[in-house]
Amino acid sequence: MEKKATVLDEAAIRRALTRVSHEIIEKNKGVKDLVLVGIKTRGVPIADRLKEKIESIEGQSIEGGELDITLYRDDLENKSHENDPDVKEAHISTDITHKKVILVDDVLYTGRTVRAAMDALMDLGRPSQIQLAVLVDRGHRELPITANYVGKNIPTSQNEVVTVELSETDARDEVIIYEK
Picture 1 (tube, rainbow, N blue to C red):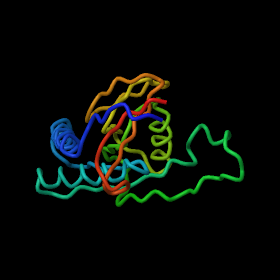
Picture 2 (picture 1 turned 30 degrees about the horizontal axis):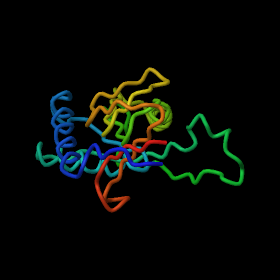
Picture 3 (picture 1 turned 30 degrees about the vertical axis):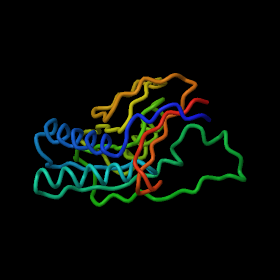
Picture 4 (picture 1 turned 90 degrees about the horizontal axis):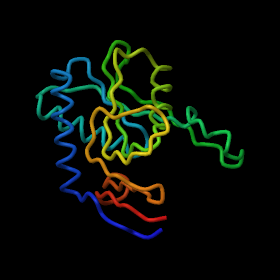
């Protein structure tokens, strides 16, 4: 793959997450009954950053967690038994029943990851509401799923790959578009 462009650097990611944090607080009229849940892998550090910013703005703590959607993916039957998925548990610090859960992921593309995450959440409880926050929305939905909060809309072609790199997992913060 050939690098086409860096669309967000460290400062741009920080600004986008600060804006999304304010939007979450405003839309939910505060943080009462709010739970931020990151979708593994890069949704987790993004959720942690949003949680930290929201707590600093509001002056009160909110619940958080992480979700592994491996067994809920609709493409599992395409994988061989030699490469069985490494399944991790959901780690959510509270019961999500009757809470407003904000799922957090790095890139929204087809919508299939979000569908799998909603299925996983519903197995854990019955939230009063599920919202979606993503760092990047690149379009090309296959399912009728839309993010409530978007750090950056990046129109892409099917021949492009959007890669999010975060210091927690990749040693630096940036969003890059590659050409296939």
